[in-house]
Length: 312
Ligand code: PLP
Image (cartoon, rainbow, N blue to C red; front, side):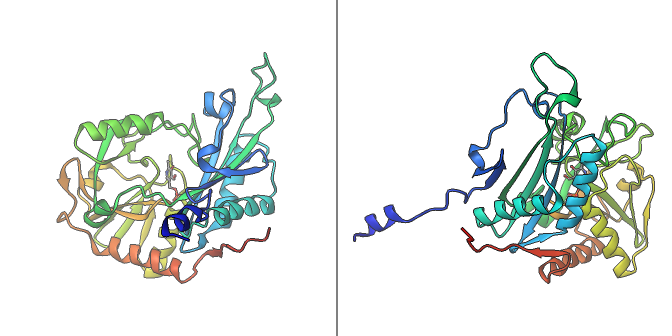
């Protein structure tokens, strides 16, 4: 056999770029489709959650499943799969893809009410899931030198309108804020609430550090699983941490600011609105917590192994 023939006959995994579960079947991620009449698409009537796999292990899988179930119940969805069924589907998406570092999303949409009806109670809710290659909120250069954050005057949708603790697709404010940040030379954005205090940004919670004390907004935000992890790590390190209102002024005069997200862990911020945070370099508290976040995870903390063997 020539080299050319050998290459041509090499079997490639059709799921290598990601695997999705849709209507009871597994398909390559690029082929997954939903009907355009699904209210998840035309009404943002949907909930979701994202868990990651790092070095072949889910991180805090049960916590994500629990939050997803809570979001679904809070938005009056009926999940068509039990906890065990969902676990199996997510595992299978990752197994098929073969990805060791993956971004794994589960989604429940309202579905499509019968023709002529606008009553969401008449729709059959639908469940989707997929595993894709790991996604970072910040690229490698940004992670090394810290992000340039803009604090926008755009207000986060008030919790009285859309409950931010139920994970949702109401991102109109976050996207508007992102464009505001880009226009002002920033790379990402944090939004404020009606009182002018900080809330969160597109896909992350925010923390400030001043004189060895850590604080993060207490309301009007998604209760991030990474935020919970940071809270646990602070307790482990003996770092005092407060959940309370945090003003933009406090962030601007903080020693350190960092973001937390499943899509990248702890991400340092080194400028706000074009001005340095602290001395403009990565801070020791962020560094220590970030190291712990990854090293403990790699040692199996809150981990669930993916079984990559083919059982077919
Ligand atoms: N806030 C918002 C609006 C988010 O969308 C996310 C994650 O997608 C977060 C915060 C961070 O949550 P987690 O740490 O669970 O990823």
